[in-house]
Image 1 (tube, one colour):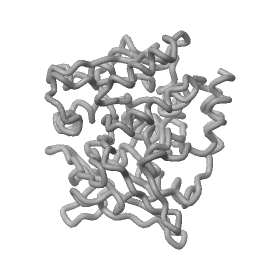
Image 2 (image 1 turned 90 degrees about the vertical axis):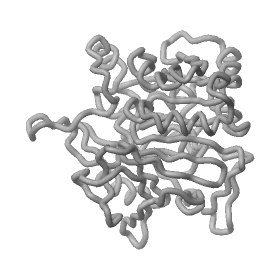
Image 3 (image 1 turned 180 degrees about the horizontal axis):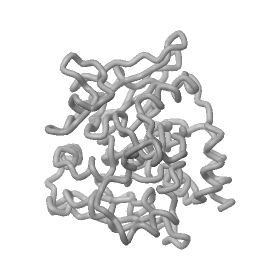
Length: 346
């Protein structure tokens, strides 16, 4: 484990974004290259099971589905088969070649083999699950340069929940939820209920669990602090939207990108589009205001801090990335991350 901590500490600040990004005099401009492609869902298994997400990924891949190689990394769910089946089923059904790169175990193939597998992928999907474990593990194994090179050549970056956070500077993470720890997930695998990786809301006050959301670093390929499941309450009884606002006040140098559980953000070069899955609950009212009871439709929100207050704006159905992304002026680490690493080491 020590070698992974050492590797993580070498990325105390997300690495510079080569080839694809530029800064203005204010240090805030974001200028993507045309090769940038990605689909980021608010949920892991729930999100990747939606036909619209698979369709968006395959469209960005730019090939007939039977010619597309989809690489799945289930690191955040410790390479368990249940999440892998749920998050790749749409691609298997479309006749894609689906390849899994299992790196959660102590013993893994040589780095050259891992890199070759990444190099051959048209789309790379990270599983939902425990963000901190997945990011630490990939950094410790030396996979980040190969993933960055894949992004630069136009491979589609994709995933939901933890699988979305990992591509960004960081995110609002449930990695301190003990139910997402390796031993707990492996022990519960035999009772896999085929649901999403995010925990369900407590049924009453007595059933609330005592864990907290934390800010976790991603690979730093995209700017922003990403909040998945933005409209959802999980087993700690806390609405993520409210907790994210408090987190953003502690990290005011970052811009928030907040994706409801049943929504996704698709990126193609300098443009984006929002996927809102029909018939699903979400936080957006008919007037475009926030509904914490999820009685609206799913959407994506942009959040930032101005004069000590969190500002929020509903992201339109399509537009330019410069409207919603901005480079961080500063990034502060969350001290609770080290506690989480000790409890669930990579």
